[in-house]
Length: 132
Image (cartoon, rainbow, N blue to C red; front, side, top):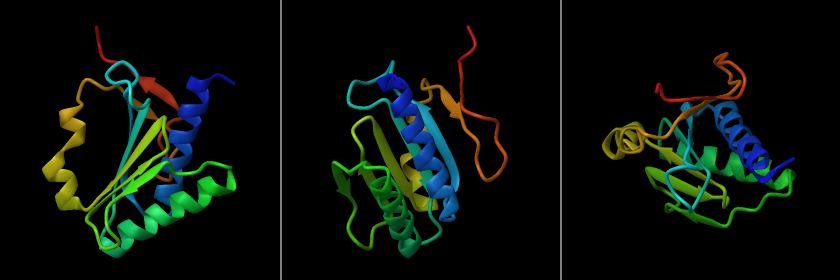
């Protein structure tokens, strides 16, 4: 398995874990051609501050089972935006208002979205490449 495969698998595991904990609208952005600090963004929405915290905790617990440790986390205990840094993958868990305000999908609109098998029935992992 290559590092690219490992990073993609990690991003998918994070998105699926967030969805299992009830996060909404999980998206994976392929950042490899746009920045050097990470390979993927996982962006999702929590319903309330406590839910954002619960999603972050669920991701940390699940990844700990797979021997992944969070490098850094941001967002106070009662935040409307939480960030988990897993090196190759940055996880952004927003409130609905925070997600609309920061609008990372628009800011990074050049990043291809990655399809993944989700609880909503998306197709298996395959990058959605921009049209030529």
